[in-house]
Length: 314
Image 1 (tube, helix red, strand yellow):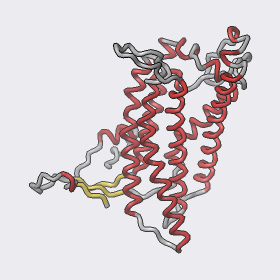
Image 2 (cartoon, one colour):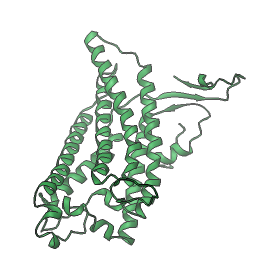
Image 3 (cartoon, one colour):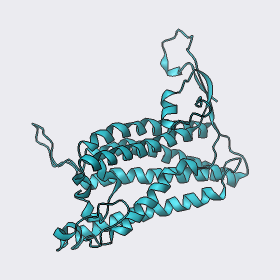
Image 4 (cartoon, helix red, strand yellow):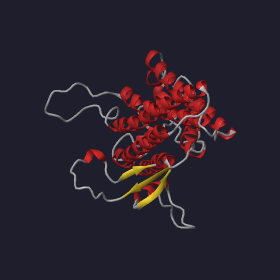
């Protein structure tokens, strides 16, 4: 992949979507992961700025605000027109993450393990784990797009009889499946580098994977706890004082009075802790060697396309 000219910084998204692929060049799978995360951040910035400016009630009167006691990043893109913007922009992560997973799998398939029997056995198991969860990362990215079809939509305008559409539980399932697949994929990348022929893991990588693991578990447990206590107790929308639980219109502060089981401060800390760990992955993933990719026009007259003529990876 050709890099931008000297002194011209570019987003990975721009580099990958505008790169010239003629001839041979090095391809770094991690750059596609970086582009996917950039896309999510850009989408959040755009939708939060747009929705907060023109439709602030969609954020601060979101039906799940009283459940959590604080904001959630999805609040800016759950309803129209913010969801139109989000669905369009986030569709790019599907390409980036499938490309990332395919490149990772290709590199792993070409790798030759070294060391003793035990080391080779561990290496094989790590490869299987890493390859599987990297593909799941891409698959759940495709499922992630379903969050704009389930949850916010309570009815469909259809002439045919149809059961009630999936609710917020399905919405959360699509989101958390992506969260967990991302986490396991990053863990797989860490151990793949740790047990490769050349161990490229440094202390900062270990500290990161520990922090990210804690942040993911912490956030998921808190969200499930808040939801569970609302469904099974006098909390959230079931709180006897629910009408007086006015949300704090802030991304960093929680209201003094809350109807959720735990204060919104817990959710705010969990949100930011996980988010910064999530988007920092490309900066704290151990070094992985690139692939050399070569594209050329095939000269074979055979119509058999199964040979993938003209595409070679080394």
